[in-house]
Amino acid sequence: MPPLFTWEFASDPYPAYAWLREHAPVHRTELPSGVEAWLVTRYADARQALADQRLSKNPVHHSESAHGKGKVGIPGERSANLMTHLLNIDPPDHTRLRRLVSKAFTPRRVAEFAPRVQELTDRLIDGFAGRGEADLIHEFAFPLPIYAICDMLGVPPEDQDDFRDWAGMMIRHGGGPRGGVARSVKRMRTYLAELIHRKREDLGDDLISGLIRASDHGEHLTENEAAAMAFILLFAGFETTVNLIGNGTYALLRNPEQRARLQDALAEGDEELLATGVEELLRYDGPVELATWRFATQDLTIGGQRIAEGDPVLVVLAAADRDPERFADPDTLDLARSDNQHLGYGHGIHYCLGAPLARLEGRTALATLLRRLPDLRLSVDPEELRWRGGLIMRGLRTLPVAFEPESGHTGT
Image (cartoon, rainbow, N blue to C red):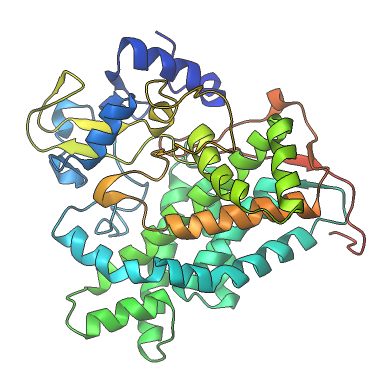
């Protein structure tokens, strides 16, 4: 069996996942944290597991004594009292909290936000377009969703760079030292509590104000739930989009025929290939490698394998989305792929709430990059690129690129 969760594995996990799909589709393994968990790798099993209500999201169901002493969840969230968010709870609380925030991510609200996303995208590209080179992760893919979700939450512009710093600490050290991550989570939690207090005196049209109004109108939303909700929308909402933009751009650069096809379509004003293309990039090398933790609330069977009560289960989205039983030529990037019910944003009641916003950001970022910097190219050998450590997310540490400097911009 190929080794799992090494640095070499992180560079290209797909051969190992192919082996697991064929030989051990529901496989028990010890994770780098010391926790033992089941990995579900086939598409049919993954889709079933994501919707199986016998698999709880609440870590209280984890039988830690039987599975090592490693921790599950986001570093620092427990000590910062941030556990009561959508990724860690089940119905009926999940249903109640999701209903409160879902109105912020309706197609209409997201469409209204499109001009702001375009403005942020152009402003960030303006910062390096005249220079002829850039690191697309740190200068573009990372700040874009941070500023966008801060705007949506209602974080004042003068405080958004603090959020960028805290988020940067979490994304840089997601697979390494935990102390800095925990401190950043605590600072974010403290800030959000203070912001909720301030907004009570001056409600706006933002998401945090909406949560406060819901609480004041008898929706039984506690202040801690409001802070936890804002935290997880930021935490889950920014890194997935960082990776969508970064992984997606990298995939296009490594597949020049597909990239040229998309550029030609955009030049002709045809946005259809952009829409199907983003879905294909989500399937081909998506931002979330493994779905977040689930715990068996009773003995059950997945893919013919018995799972004991209390066992952690991790659905490997990256493996399921390259299952040849579901997708033709799964290791081939095809931007026009039409039958593409990928699991990149999950499935079932925990389907990613912010998926419409992430798709908007991904489409806007990729289209604008290709239009404004048409000769975009990698400026290092692909072998030099490194992927961030960590269990759940899949993303590049850096993405150095070069291009013909854009006239009219001096760069910074």
